[in-house]
Length: 136
Image (cartoon, helix red, strand yellow):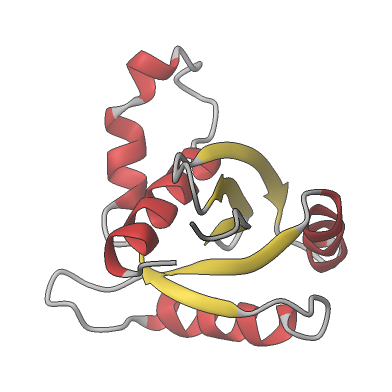
């Protein structure tokens, strides 16, 4: 049996970063935080990595309906590149196509205010996609 490790997923947006966490044994993503995307976000993620003993980070990579990368994909790759300067854990990417739409579809069962952001829930779907495509 393999050792349980904690993984963070990031749903990178221009305004906010949704953060979710799961361990590799249970594979049940949980919303963790919504961070403002600004100069302090890298330090905040670095703190989460230490606090939750994170072994790797998955960054959502947007694609269009044809599966091609977009301008936002480049922004996510640039964000991950800068994040590598702050954290010393492996980073990977997972397709985040429709993660925000899926999060919105779950809003009513989450009992969240209609104006409350769901970036952390979208990050859960990024982790689910990661688990589907990898056998960590």
